[in-house]
Image (cartoon, rainbow, N blue to C red; front, side):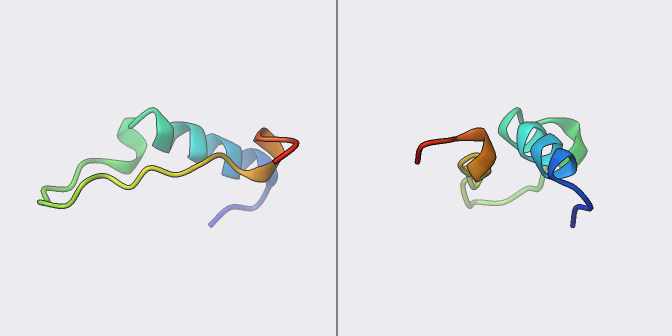
Length: 44
């Protein structure tokens, strides 16, 4: 949940960097990689 575009951008950047913000979960499944929000990838 985010209140602004800036918060979504920060969350995306933290996820992409595997920052401690989201922690680690022991699982046999691979980590889900995601693309950037549309405003960080103009022209697509």
